[in-house]
Structures are given as C-alpha cells and as structure tokens.
Image (cartoon, rainbow, N blue to C red):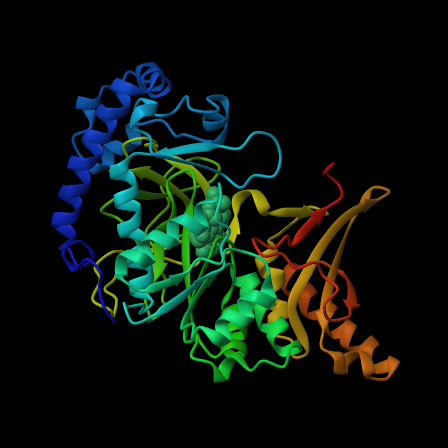
Length: 434
Ligand code: DLL
C-alpha cells in the first residue's frame, strides 16, 4: 500500500522527537504572543515559552478544555487576524453554542496532507472513485476528507450525507470503489441495499474510510462482510483539526497518529497525571503546526492506549487503539460503571442481533433501570414465543456477566431504531433532562 509522505510517516523516532520539540517551542511562543487566553494561563503558572526545553516540559503547560473554547466564542481563541482565516468550521455539539475553529491557508494545506495520508493508508490511489457520504457543512468530516482524497488524485463524488437511495444508485452506476462516512451509516447503507435487492458485494466497492464515532471490531466485521470491503477507522476532532489526526493502515492494528503535527499524551482522567506505558488513558493533544487555532494540551475525553512498536506497514508513527469510550459517556447505573461500548461488544457476539441498538437509562423511584433495545433478524420474530423468551434471557445473562447488571432486553423489529446519516445516538439517559 502507498505511503503518502514517507519522509514523515517513516521518520526515525529520535528525529521525530527533535522535530516535535522545535514545533512545540514555536507553538507555545506563537500562542503566548497572540492569544490572550493562553498568555494569561501561562502567566498564571509562571511559565514562559523559553521554559519549554524538552518534550516532557509540555507538562508545564496548562490543560485546555471545552469550557475555555466555549467561553471565547466565537473567535476569541484565534491566533491570527480574520484576514488570514480562510475557513471556519464548528463542532457538532447539539446543545448550546458550538465551538468555532478557524484555518489559515497553511492550516488547510496541512489538513489536506493529513487526510490524504489517511486515505492512502487505506489503499486509496488515483485509480479510485471515492463516494463522499459525510456531511459537507460546518462539520469537519466532509470537507476535511474531500481535499485529502483530491490531493491523492482519486476521483471524488461529493454527494454528502443522506439520500441513501441516490448513494446506492451512484455506487452502482459510477463504479464507486471507496466510500467515506460514519460506520453506522455504512451499516445503514448495507441494510438499504439488501432491502433494495442490490448486492453491494458484487459491485466494485472495495474499501471504506470510516470515522467520526466509535465502533468496535464486531461492527467492523459486520460492515466488511455485508459490503464486501476492507473497513478502516480514522479519528479526529474539530477542536484540533477534524479528521486526519489518526487513521488505520491496511493492517488494522491501531490508528497511526500524525505525530509530526500533534503531540499526544495519555493522562489519568481524574488526576491529569501521565499513565504508565501501555496503559489506557485520556488522550490529550497539543497542536504543533496549527496557525489559526492552535491548542495546548486539549483534553479530548477520549480513552485509548498508545503503542509505539513497529508496524508491518513500515510507518514509524505510533498507533492509538480504536477509541471505544469517552470519559464522559460512562454511565453510572446503580453505582456500576458501564460503557456503551461494552454493551455493543456483547450484542455483536450474539447470532441474530442486528448492529442497531439503543440504550435507555431511566429512574423508577430510587432505582436506575437500564433497557437495551435491540433489533433482531426477522427469523427471531417468526420463532415460537418460548424461543424468543429464551433468546432474550440469554442476551440478558451474557450482558450481566460483562457489565454486572441485569438489563431489560427489548427486541424490536428490523428497521425500527432511528437511522442517521451522521453519528448514531446510542444512549438515551432519561435521568438527565435532555
Ligand atoms: O467527528 C471529526 C471526524 C470526522 C473524524 C470524520 C473522523 C472522520 P467532532 O464532530 O468534533 O469531529 O467529534 C469528535 O468524535 O472526540 C471522538 O469522541 C469521536 N470520534 C471521532 N472519530 C472517532 C473514531 C469529528 N474513529 C469526537 N472512533 C471525538 C471513535 C471518534 N470516536
């Protein structure tokens, strides 16, 4: 498979660390001079840009969280005058004001390179025909991936999200070989194709670039099987750039991180202290080359593990494990900590369960209840009642053995759980006012 920028993606790790330090030093100086928020935060800690003498000195810098980015809405964190900002995007938050981010021409150039790397790592070349099913708009997914794919020289069909019928039509008529969207939308497309009697596996489609939301190995297997493709995962967030932060190569053993443009740390979510080697922690990102919207030690809330061991693809960039959970999506039900990803993993192992589910948490009286609504294959419904009861019990028992709680299992007919063209909404927590 091609390596888009071998000079950087296969850089000697010692040289990479030197490059990171130089870039960290200039980023700290850049924000100190240009962003009042950072100047004040650094002054409050008595830290000056010249105090950054090694990569470990990143720990002298303050963390940045969503609140800081919200409080400075809309452009307060921009480090360049608006004349130099050529594009603005915003986070996909559904409540309140979004977080607004800006890009200079230089930032767009970097972003394009990084999404080109993602597509390239999945094997996309100029011979590919790529169908875009991410939203174009304030969301970073559509535009971010679009330019990277163009830079590779592949042909792009910028259809955008939604209109599944049109997507299926294009897929058949245009000879689409690669698709870009969220994993949940990929599954929805698979389902819509099956219903329409279209056998996607017989079409030229061969690779999928999926990201923007968590998905487990069970989900990946399902997508690969139903669409007959190689499915790769890529990760990013608007606050630090959008897609392009990390992505899998064809070996699917973790997401190579763009360490030449970002400094990654893993910290304990409560103490903020670094976790030990190979341990899970919250990903914290410092941008190293951003001009318009640099961030220092941004708390992503995403939990992962970093592995810097060599990869069979030849890239030297370290890999992060697939992000399955966020520190803030942990549910506490009757005092038990539950992550939606644990539930997904159990469900995906049960034959007859469709990859669409929803978790509903509610409180009756003093007790929390957890209900898992699961779509099941048509055959399960046509079975005798006793079989359905046994099936439900089996799922409840398996779940209990993993999460330690008895959940109410509700089987629903195929197609009844809401589908979105973007990120799936897996959890409805009625205990908190929505
Ligand atoms: O979702 C950027 C993106 C678009 C990445 C398209 C990849 C592809 P936001 O809307 O700001 O940006 O959401 C960022 O989504 O902190 C994660 O919690 C989650 N997320 C994104 N990609 C993945 C992934 C875009 N591959 C937030 N696996 C992040 C798990 C993901 N979670």
